[in-house]
Image (tube, rainbow, N blue to C red; front, side, top):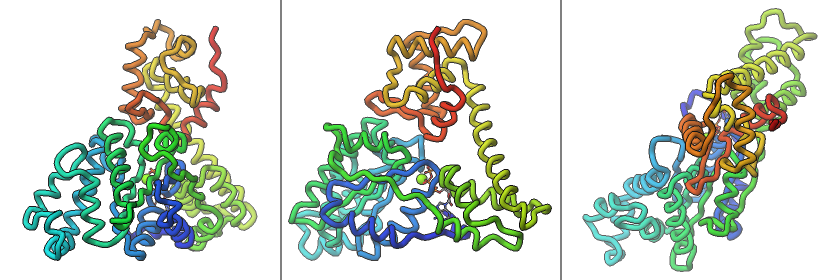
Length: 381
Ligand SMILES: Nc1ncnc2c1ncn2[C@@H]1O[C@H](COP(=O)(O)OP(=O)(O)OP(=O)(O)O)[C@@H](O)[C@H]1O
Ligand SMILES: [Mg+2]
């Protein structure tokens, strides 16, 4: 994130979340959900982490979307390793002062390099050393945490973190908190609700979306042209899903409409906003329409079925077949292996998310809305 882009801060909200997280209410884990592109990462990086740091917490941040080709489990272990490396001085100092039996002076780097999931030094041990050396609560922030359960290593990393949490929250150490974010509440809830999930009983809540004060702040920076009214901008911003980028784009476009007057500025602004929204939808629909027929059908059935989607059930297969007839005039092979192939292709195109245990869902909730608008009912003849 470059520093040139001005950021609207929400320090009060951040402080409330941080205080609650560090209190005993947050000990099982805190999961924050907000839709895509609404400012989760910005809020975490610009407000939550600084607020944690002012309270002297040791903060480790990892974004599981930072590199989609990497295993989420590796990304988590690497973030912990990198943090330990940064704090090597403190760890060594602590080791010299008497933690010698726990940590090997001179061997710290080797120890750190070995930190991993199921290999060498465990995450729990590494985090316990860090906790003892710094005398601080450790907060691990995992952005886009739902990706942790897309691989076995990622799921194992969560279990390793649960072990760390249980150990560090014991009286011998200084506490551990996990803050996890995700762009889909249903997927995040799979991490906290399933009885075999590592973070059972963690708190899960929806992040308050950016609202009127953000819009006001944006408008205050709107150059020299005639600005639309706060009420109009606010209602358009909310209606299009609280996305700062859409608002930026609409205001930028408005600045280049030179026929704008005090009396037409609001309607001009509304028409710009609907044009932007329509554009995004059309782009997405073009992408859907250029998918091979079975992939497009799978995507539509998944979106319109929702949580009950079962990819290989006969009723689902009938729906694919009905849709394939709409997407293609030639015969499409629909069997288990072609369905499996289509699901995998959609996952690779990042249109679909799937857990290591075989649960599938549409990646972006906005796509679900659009697909439902375009395909209100999938009827089987
Ligand atoms: N508080 C803010 N002030 C100014 N711009 C913001 C703010 N929050 C978000 N934005 C802008 O909105 C866009 C999306 O923000 P961000 O990447 O934080 O969202 P996200 O929810 O994490 O997205 P994704 O779902 O892709 O992870 C970025 O261009 C960012 O600069
Ligand atoms: Mg993000």
